Length: 111
Image (cartoon, rainbow, N blue to C red; front, side, top):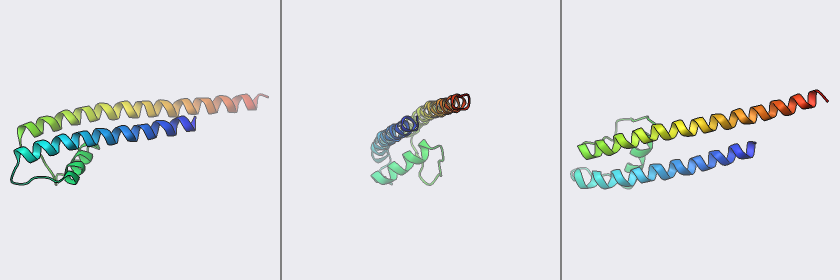
């Protein structure tokens, strides 16, 4: 069961990375077209996407146009849904591993 939990965590990290990169590419595209005065580098876009995904939002990079705000709000809502899904599945995996260990311990105790 520890292997299943480890496999789940690894796949989860891959999906988080993909999700952040997709958003970073979209926000990089919109920001550099709409805000010509201060274009972001790809690294700055990934930083903004990561901070937004983890709901930290430091405020050092902000979006300034309505299309960027719309895309960012959609990303934030999908990220919250995604985190709820991941945490729920992770919690279920931990609970199942605990139940299996408890049953194994109880069966060894009665022998």
